[in-house]
Length: 312
Image (cartoon, rainbow, N blue to C red; front, side):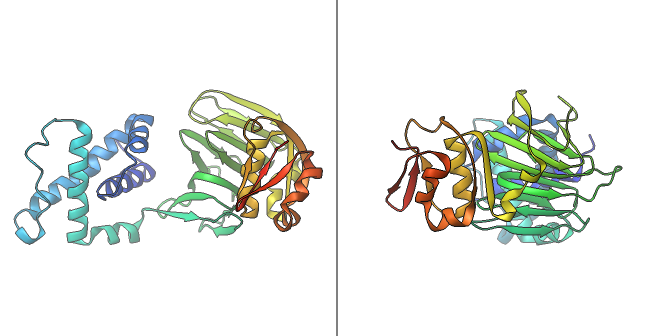
């Protein structure tokens, strides 16, 4: 099977992470493997190459990888991968290949703290504005791909019909059709709002077109989604210091406000599913969180170092 660079980069990144003794995200690793048969095959290809390198290194005792304990004989695929991951790390470290892999390609992560924004200019002419409390993975080999892992990002894409820009969120894929669009991840829910051009949602599955003035909400990893409308001026308005909520849950409002202001804001117990509407400026709320009360028609109270909205 031929793999695109993105899948090989992900396989190599998982292998390198799994080699770290402190690695604990086996659940996430398993979910990635099961998301696409190509993932498992790419991972096997990468780790097989690493195992070959490790075999060569055994001839040099000082560089030999750690011995596998005799009682580690359950034969499980995951156990073998843990050991091969260690061999990969040893091989890459000994040969200096990891640095070479990064310089030639590979992925890199950009993160922002709550209350912070960051502009990322990609070499293809696309720009990504990352909201506070967000994490995105980009590829040095493929400037036409991004994976939003958490938070929110506004994409202004230089359209190339022959090589469209792709954004992954979990197992969902969004492909530009000449576009300015905003992607937000709140737990298992992803929303994509378009102000210019269009976006194709999961073109190899549901193949839903999102036009300007429309917003798609998806339960990430499932076939469920809804398509609604939004004023184009509200798409990415957080970059100008404003947030608008239309019949939104207080749980989502709290997450969005925390990301935008940098404050610890949560919904009161039992109030997370209550729905509110309103439009507000971020800076005044950052300076005086109690001002949320009259703006959204909710109670606001101080709780330690943070704030609780929706309290009665």
